[in-house]
Length: 164
Image (cartoon, rainbow, N blue to C red):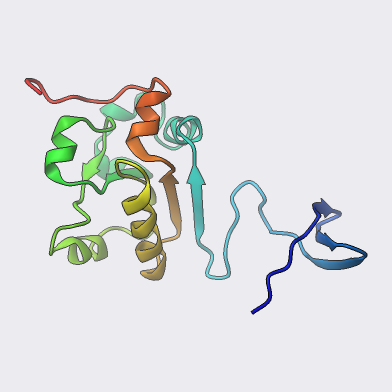
């Protein structure tokens, strides 16, 4: 397997142009550069906290905490343990423990037509879950890179259980 380094990446007139030294390779540009879609029609994006916040507001509305989870088009999945979830979590999130023996069964029961924002403590577990969900045919997947720790570092609110 060869690894090539490209000196420039450019999209011009719906063509993706990769340049390496003196040669040029032209490929069709992605159909939707805002939300890149793979060959199976899946959107799978890594988002920073501010992008996640915008996604939550855009897909769930500014009053997303008042909308029941079954009525939302964006489902926020916290894949940490119940103990971690109890310390703090994103408002409106559902806990689905990645380390639970029933995790895969519970995951397979989720609606594949909804969009999912995944997060964990640092983004590692949620990144793995994104790949699993992709393989199961889910179409709209977003991962909070660097997890809830980065979310908090950037000053966004979390829900803390009383007494913790």
